[in-house]
Structure formats: C-alpha cells, structure tokens
Amino acid sequence: MSRVIRIGTRGSKLALAQTGTIADALRATGAEVELVTVTTPGDKSSAPIPTIGVGVFTSALREALLREEVDVIVHSYKDLPTKPEPGITLAAVPRREDPRDALIARDGLTLGELPPGSTVGTGSPRRTAQLRALGLGLEIVPIRGNIDTRMRKVTDGELDAVILARAGLARIGRAEEITETLDPIQMLPAPAQGALAVECRTGDVDIEHLLGSTVDDEGTRAVATAERALLAALEAGCSAPVGALAEIVEDLDAEGRVVERISLRGTAAVEEDGDTVDMVRASALADKHEAEQLGRTLAAELLDLGAGALSGPAQ
Ligand SMILES: NCc1[nH]cc(CCC(=O)O)c1CC(=O)O
Image (tube, rainbow, N blue to C red; front, side, top):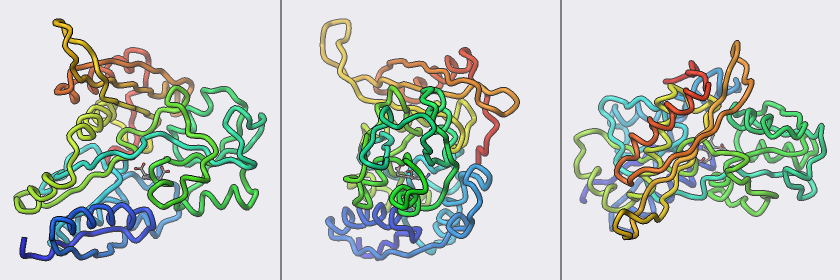
C-alpha cells in the first residue's frame, strides 16, 4: 500500500508495547507505519475506573479515528465497551497472550501462602469478588494507576500483594516478577483479557483487508466472541464482577472424528443492594462456529443461578 498507515495509541508503556506489535507486523509486509500518540481523559483522571466508566480509554482513540487523524487504533480488548460503535470496524483480533491473572506478592509468596489479614491491591470488582469468594481472609485494598505504579506498592512494602493481568506484565517485560499465575479455577479472567482489538474506519477496505490478512487470528476471535457475548448478555461493563474464559478444545463428533469446539467457563456476582454476596459459576461447550450463542446461553444459565442483571457502566 502506498499510503502511510497512521496508528493511534495511548502514551502508556502498555499501550505503546501493544501498538508496537501491530506496527511491526504491518511493517513486515512492507507498509510504511507512523505512530500517533492520543491522550485520553482516562490518562489524566485519578478517579477509580468503575466510577469514570470503561469507555474513557477508548473513546478518545475512536474519535481520532473517526476524525481521520489516524487510520488504525489498538485497544486491550477487555477495555472495549460491548456496544458496537457506528462507523468503526473490528478489523483484527491478534493471537491472544496468556489470559490468566497473576499475583505479585512480597517474598515470592503464592495466594495460598499469604497469611489471613494480608493486604492485596486491586481496583477490579471482578478480582475483588473472586478473592473474597476464596475465603482466605485477605484484606482487599482498592488501587489504581498504571502497572508500574501498582507493582511499586509491593516493592515499597505498602501492600503484601497485587493482582494484574499476566498479559500486560509480559508485554511490558515484567512477567518474571510474577509470584503465582492464578488458576482459572480460582480466578476467571476478564472477558477477552490478554487479547487485542484492532479497529479501523468502516469502509476503509484497504486497511481492513491488510489487518485481516496480517494480524487476525481466527481462534482468538472465536474465544473472545464467546466471552464478550456472555458479558454483553449480562449487560455488564468491563469493571463489573464478571469473569469468563473460553478455550478451543478437541472433542469427538458422532462419527468419532476429532473436531474443535469451544469450552466456556463463566462467573458472575450475585448482588444484593449493590453488594456482592456470592459468585456463581457455570460452564458449557459448543461448536466452534457458535461462539456468540454459547456466550448468551451461559449468561442465561448464570442469571438462572442468581447472577444479578448488572447495571454497571455499560458504555
Ligand atoms: N484494565 C486495565 C488493563 N487493560 C488491559 C490490561 C492488561 C492487558 C490485557 O489484559 O490484555 C490491564 C491491566 C490489568 O488488568 O492488569
């Protein structure tokens, strides 16, 4: 392509790392790529994310895309609102990193080794609810800030531990400080955690085809679709207490042939007067081409089990 491809990015270390992988992949095809930094209101605010809403990091990037200041934008998929944005196309979902959550604790401790009363920092209602459900007697401390700021609270001795997405730590080169990668049986990740969403303007077919043929990964798209359909059906924003993990698994069909299916596990909070009183869990299996339906079916099951129809920021 003869035109220079402008990729819009936030200025954080994580955003630059994520955008960098897409820029590198496009450059490898011979394309000329330029990075354009966009400052979002979410970068300037110090309010807790559940208060300011999930859209704060994405809307400024989308506005820059719609104003034609940039041609491609890259998000952490889990930070995207579930509602589609008119004029914007999800052109690629690249191969996902490890979706699990990670513990960074003092003295190399694991979750099970933290004594009752230990302080664990997280700003996520999903992580908070699942930690409480484990019944370890941990004290959950609300925190925010970028990954480095959160990690510093452990190295400075202010907190005993923090929980962060493994993918983010890997992307900024700090995965070796993880003291335990949490088993999804204890802690289901956020829907689409560890995956990226690469967007372009609807109708910009050159860019759409380029992204689709270079960085899109069909399997990741399928699992992320199942997880996000579950989230959407619960009408929850990314900061609501919902966890989901879909995986491609091999199964046998009626004739004994090996086929790929999607397995989906989900968890959601049972709420009373806005407080989480319990977490319910369920799982299901479906054909690889029925990702969306699988997510909706599992959401219906979680609602039957008492999950609250969530009213969180669903922008
Ligand atoms: N909500 C913030 C956010 N958005 C994406 C990531 C990490 C990368 C990812 O999950 O893809 C993080 C940090 C975290 O949750 O630890």
